[in-house]
Length: 443
Image (cartoon, rainbow, N blue to C red; front, side, top):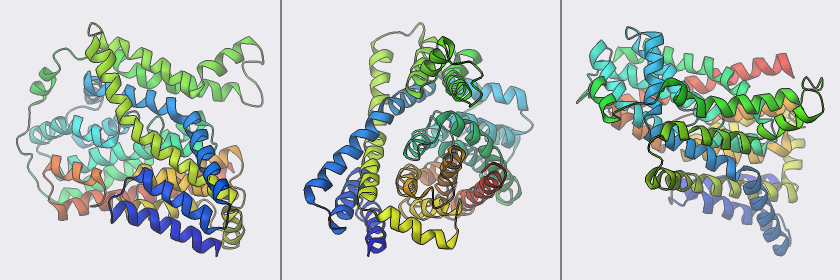
């Protein structure tokens, strides 16, 4: 009966979001109440568990998501994302436009949502397509899959941050492993673009020239200024992870305390936010310091609320003992690292949002880590990767990103299914194979 309750709760989330267009926040809260009451818990205890799960999750992750989202807004509005693109183009060369767009997507989507990243880079993508004569089907697929890889696997994008938090995985290790796993996933997307999408000729329409695109931002920031808000927090978080190795490479005194402080994800991302001031000069005014920050806060609010509501569901699953029973039942099938992938893939495909799939799946999977053989620190990291890979499978008509890619690239729906939907399937399957191999080697 407990398994039936969990199954109904998952179906309820999918139906409310997909069929009735209910916001994910309300859908997760409704599922939380249902799980607690259907499992026979005292209604007062259900309310307390929901509030505790909600508050505890928001406490751990709220400022991190806000800071990361504001950094993304600054990179978008100052043209720093285009500076990153220009830097990569110079390194790769204009004769390999699809390679360039895959790499640009991989980098841009670490702090910026894939939807926003595609919109920002769409004009550049069309311009390169027109200049090189490469089909927009290839260019759109290369860019979209590059963006998608890091969007679901690498913090500080909110989805992976939330999943790492829910699974109690070390964020620095998640960033490092996520960057590594995202490389073959990006390559898989690139190969799909060049070997399959290249069958379809599609001319870029109303392409803006690269020069006109750059002129829009007048003076773009330098490469150093553009990359610092992204790289600095990652370095600080990684240093904290290194400082806490069993060998204590930085000792146990003042230096370690200092590194632990600046490497705390919240503090590290606030340092990244301070680095964004380099991008704003000389535009330190009300529009940037209040308006742009306000935009970031608005964008992050929904993510925080959904993440916290996922924490409520997790609290109810723990309190109702559903997770314990599910873990003992699934242990018989020895699904291991594949279970988080399958749950996330089912949720992603059914309701469309990668972020919701990451949050909901990580909430469900955390109590099961021991029975899945993933209770170690590295096991939690690989479980996060497995969830991220599942959250790619697949992007289709119920996913806003699918429509961003198709509409901004001029792909008809049937062609978008062939390029984008099947491409994300290939990416997800590639990712879980890589994660499985890492589990064999590391856990």
